[in-house]
Amino acid sequence: MIMLLNLSCTIAAGGRHTVGIRPDGTVVATGNNDDGQCNVAGWTDIMHVAAGFSHTVGLEEGGTVVATGNNDDGQCNVGGWTDISLVVAGDWHTVGLRNDGSMVATGKSDQGQCDVLGWAGIQQVAAGGAHTVGLESGGTVVATGRNNEGQCDVGGWTDITLVVAGYAHTVGLKNDGHVVATGNNAEGQCNVAGWTNITQVAAGRAHTIGLRDDGTVVATGRNNEEQCKVSGWTNIVQVVAGGWHTVGLKNCGTVVATGNNNDGQCDVGGWILETLSGDPPASYHLTISSAAGGLVTAPGEGTFAYCESEVVNLVAEAESGYSFGNWTGDVGTIADANDATTTITVNGDYFITANFEQITPQFDLTVSSTTGGTVTAPGEGTFTYDQGTGVNLVAEAEEGYRFTNWTGDIATIADVEDATTTITMNDNYSVTANFAQIPSSINWLLIGGIIGAVVVVMLVIFLVRRK
Image (cartoon, rainbow, N blue to C red; front, side, top):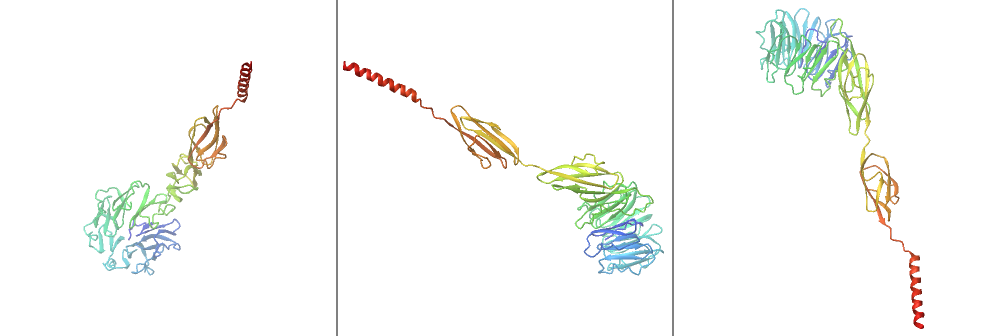
């Protein structure tokens, strides 16, 4: 499924893949490659690219065409095409516009979507799910193929400068910057009547994208995969819409994307593409990594391309048991290198790393004592320590008492029978210092004296009685 952007299409979005032309004319692709639709590494001197549901087409500088991907319906049989000025790809068919305004087509034509051989004076062409649309030199439009949703009802259109085709709807850009649409509107993909100052349009499976003259973007239609989440885009010079994703080319050659990314079709962050501008702004790469204990969630980890002076949000998230430490590397333009949520201004090729620190677990030690003494170190009550800390325990008996032992969570106490010992904190512990009363001492001298006195008294009594 395709969507032609304009006569200078350096990016293309298919059903589940994305394609772009580098400044040197080579091609890069990402996304689903089940049918080889991303096998474009050997292509050179490419001027335009187009993407169908699962095939990719490239227009070479000499007017010849290359194609790769699914060819079940012959949609890649373009080897003999010459004098081509533009190529577009529908779901399962491919269409070429010749320099003389005539047309060629190949692939599935069960709905007549390839019946374009009689067309003449065509300035631009678009291919949808099973229909093909042509822009005539006078600003009128022709269409062929499936029309079950009215997607080919373009006979009354005038003053059109660009046409694009989605799965079952067709969109036209008028020369005054307004937009018209026809076809399936179940998801609101044709609700474009209020758009103004539009310079480009793109159509996906059930959504429509518009590029304003100020470089911002509008969208309507299905948004279940956030394919219409483009309100924050700026400095955009081209837009394309795939099956369930949307891609934008910035004026410096970097690329943004939103929508379904199950196959990696939105993994375009590191791309720098041809902008077709004579002097585009500079662009740079930002490479982001993380140390153990966390990851960077915005913009992610890897290498991303940005325009010069672009401000990029950075968000680092720590794993359980860790805390964010700092950003290191090329941190000169980071707003706050010690903040996990911050920004970086890209003025060069930068490498940065998010660092994390392991959080040492802490445990509570609850200390108490029985009657007859107190715990003087660390005291009595509840105290908090880092895991592995050795805590001094000192128990002091009151007068008439003696220390007996420590009881409770005593597994890591060095000596439970010593009033001065240590406990190693590996968990939450509760310990008690126990004391016992010392029995009273017997004064044998006093007892001896008393006995002696009694003996003397008894002896005196005895002697007295004998007299």
